[in-house]
Image (cartoon, rainbow, N blue to C red; front, side, top):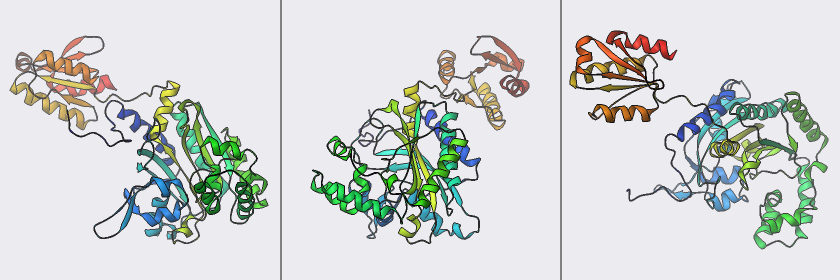
Amino acid sequence: MSTFKAPKGTYDLLPPDSAKFLAVREAIAAPLRNSGYGYIETPGFESVELFARGVGESTDIVTKEMYAFETKGGDRLALRPEGTASVLRAALEANLHKAGNLPVKLWYSGSYYRYERPQKGRYRHFSQVGAEAIGAEDPALDAELIILADQAYRSLGLSGFRILLNSLGDKECRPVYRAALQDFLRGLDLDEDTLRRAEINPLRVLDDKRESVRKQLTGAPLLRDYLCDACKAYHEEVRELITAAGVAFEDDPRLVRGLDYYTRTTFEFVHDGLGSQSAVGGGGRYDGLSEMIGGPVLPSVGWALGVDRTVLALEAEGVELELPATTSVFAVALGEEARRVLFAKVTELRKNGVAADFSYGGKGLKAAMKAANRSGARYALVLGERDLAEGVVQLKDMESGDQTAVGVNEIVAELESRLG
């Protein structure tokens, strides 16, 4: 038994369950790759200031949940708590927006870190796949991303999720709503921290999950009643485009999400089979984020979908993914010369795209065949000294139990034919 354990609130991905996570990542990424999104990878840590400016100094993420530290050189860094700020920083640093082809469409996959109270569906280390479309203000772009996420989930066989949709307005209409909301919140029985948050960014209070706060928000003014004509028209076009694509959604006037940078379109994917941690992903438009972190005006939109939460949603619905076999052929060699010959054939099979494994460690026939069974291989190759002398290898169908002698030099072609 190891002396060490995974840190509290984290997890290890191990076979065979890790195959589900890989399949989920691939399913989410596939529609993006098919829609002009290129892959981007950013460092696991960034300047603390990047997240303080972009995510928002009043958010729980920045005030309570970031893993921040100081380097030996005196730099203040943080493990990334989310992906959008990092991706936008990288795009700006590389001047991707100056290449003349806007929007810049990027997708990413990675681990993120927040110091939260661990519970099922909420970890201190978690995995997401995300997408960002940078540099264009177009309702069709917002609709595209929502449709692609819906497509990804449905390709996995998920059906029990809901899409919640709202508009958070823009710099023209949100200040008026902000003032009205602050007036309302000042009249409530709230603790000092919450009142302080209401003065910095009152929309954060609407995102408070505590029942003592939520029950007081029943009569809070709704942002949809304060939207300017431009925001109303923009939001209505997003709704129309999604509806025309056959994607169902629910209008949720109280949806604000947990980050300060959102403007106009905001959305969340929820699954009722996950209990309190029902959100499996979400996103929205963030037209002012580029300016917040020192860049030019670059209206943008994006989302992030939780791989961990999606796997839990699949389990809640009882969906079994069709995963490719990790091993199609398992080779068992008895004797040194047979070992050398069969290992060469395994290498040849692999070069030809056949998933093949080998009985390592000099196991006897009984132990080696147990290993072949455990591998899940469809076929086993068995080569002993007598077979070698006759120039054949025994090909065993692990499902039917049928066994056939096949010429050593024909075995690769025979397996390729059988496996299709």
